[in-house]
Image (cartoon, rainbow, N blue to C red):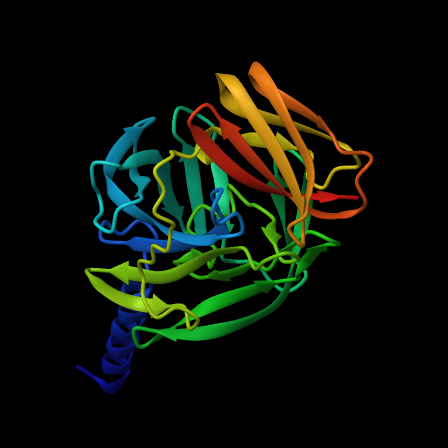
Length: 310
């Protein structure tokens, strides 16, 4: 073998090594730990801030239109999959694009494009309020498992008196808010408390290959021990921020609902009872601009919401 052929062979082996070292978003052993920090108080501790972890992962293959896709789902347990597993849809890698089909849908969406350059933009759907473009601000590389991966920083999106979106993608891993955050984005509270929706760890083949510097553990569970079940998972409210009227859909029809509203320093500014409904229309036009906490006691269930009055 002459010198040129030897050099060519070495170069090809080098390229193969780089390709195989890249993180495959659909690798069966992939696990994403996402910690959410949010207000979840009760009557005794109305301002308690909880942190719970959702574990996302790849759970085998599925056939869609004669093509092999990878199933992606989540669980609230520390083991994946578990009895609380929820299938969220299917993902597929197409060169540097990550495609996603939501569960019970036939639409194909691009949730990641790792070919983005500075100045490019991605449209995020902040349902039900509005849509907004996030623009690439800068790009660098991060060393993971001995190999460099592209890291994409987007311009910060600020909402006065409310929220902020600081989005960062890592090639092969996805958003630092979780693998499906680009499909289910949300505005994170920054005024009354630091709401978190952070990727704490990315795990592959039972080994953590990336971890968030602000978290000491992958799986975090800080909650109040309460006897009353919460209704937060079924609850939907809008608009927030509001100019005076806010609609709260509590999911089920309750016989008796008590509503209490406290301002940011804990003063009670409203207390009223509502009977037999699943939708509440609150009029807070008389309240001053600022941050308020709505405490809902529905039959034997409860919830605490944070709203901004403009």
